[in-house]
Length: 267
Image (cartoon, rainbow, N blue to C red):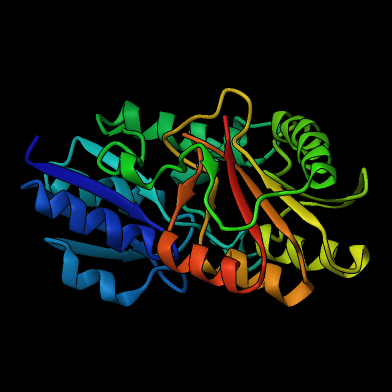
């Protein structure tokens, strides 16, 4: 494989992936989304095609024109934008017509299936970057207390269930009660919602879905996650080791240590 396609969303992951692929001798052909993808991605790739959300025909045509047979999905798409300003083309509409709902996994699997019919295999987004996956153990100077660990295990069961239902991947807990469940607004907004209700010392649990498809929608945390926790006085972040992407780990830990936040990776 000498070429790799990139379906790029927002955030730093598309750029990180592109630099890693280039370092391994791969030419990256990126499809970027208007209003989502960082324009600086253009400097890291061989060629780039800008599309609007839902323009599946243009995406497939670009990869075919550049003889791309393998691709990854990296970065997020703001889910609330799926309900405003999206103009799916005929191919995308046909895919949507086969679905009973547009929850994350079902939608992404359907899109991946349509691309594979066109000879484009979607690969796990982590296949060049396994070092970004969370490691097991406590990352910070402060360790969770016994009561905080009780909330971690309580929240773990809750968030695995909402993951099974394809609702979200994180939950905010305090004292054995659920303060907030992630929905379409995303993790950072969930932390702030739950933190306001929990009145500080809340515990954040973020895990993969049962039978997580590592090709897309892999849970991710980074510096912004810790900043959101600082804003509401949250005390613990528990993530699933081996199945959660972590960005800016050194900066995450440094900020957590300054604010007496514990970060723990659990298998």
